[in-house]
Length: 226
Image (cartoon, rainbow, N blue to C red; front, side, top):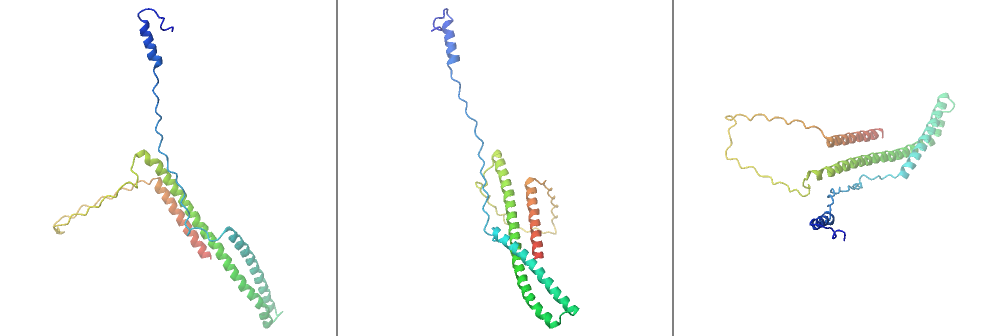
């Protein structure tokens, strides 16, 4: 009402100006487009060929039995040594020695068989553990590289590899004439391409290769000791 009471010829223009200034609505700001969501990379399952066949309980029992069997073997060895020393000193004769050592020989064969079985179980567990660790390190490295690829690719607006169509290979035109090699000059030697600088992906691959070689050396060492 105060605006309508303004006097003079400029009052209507002032009213119109205030309506324009204060009555206009501010344009709504559009939200910025959200960056493309990165695909969550799930670790691929461990194949059955890599899963362990020896459980933690089995390996604990095998190691305890191996320890006891080695101790028993040492005791049998000490007893046989004393029997042979007694024969050498003349305390017992040869028939008595043969009669005394026979039970120890049977026990020694039994203990050696047990040691062989328990040692193979321990070796199998260590080999399977090394193989599983190698697979997990490869999986972690693979997922790390794939995550970096998924982070960089959207910023370059490149087509999805699954959407790209393979280019058709064109067959070379049939040769009409076979040139005489004695009359034509040999083609100039091609320049050798320059060696490209190694990037981070190549360094990762080299690290995996070194880990595989170390694991193979470890496996060979375990087989040699076995």
